[in-house]
Image 1 (cartoon, rainbow, N blue to C red):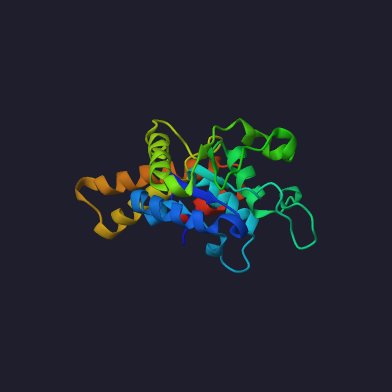
Image 2 (image 1 turned 90 degrees about the vertical axis):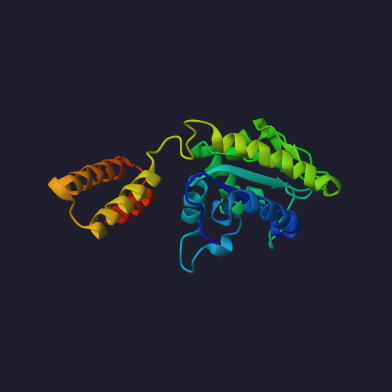
Length: 227
């Protein structure tokens, strides 16, 4: 599954406890918003790629992150017996940290009788999660509860001026400019140099946006799109 192309939905969950619910929720969201707009699993990450950077990129490309919290979400342990949330490299922790840091809308989804964690329950980097209003999804009322969630997501995606990355320029705009440049090249030069002028404007805009990006990973991706 590919990373969502801006304005997408990231589903964060632990396989050991909520994989079935996450799968049902993905199906519902994919039907409504399209498969390309829902990122659910790190299996999409290519071998050899830094998973932390890829998670950061995937989260930054989305407007909404759904943090699915089951009954054992807080207490899940690794093979050494340590609590997963206390591990700085825990995937779920990285996903939510990235969303909170980038200004992505985080919606806690409480399932299987789970309750919202308190600030004392979480690492400091996840403390902001406790201030997010949660939505409960129950097995017996899944269709109704998922419908409420879809409505909430629709409002977020439709909000004017909402950006997936509040502190960074619009990388998607770089891609759009690059695509438009490609179309100009395929069509050839128009009368009176119209296409030449348009191409020059698009290239200037794309280079300006790409050069203003401070995050090196995103900058490299944007400049590659321009090329």
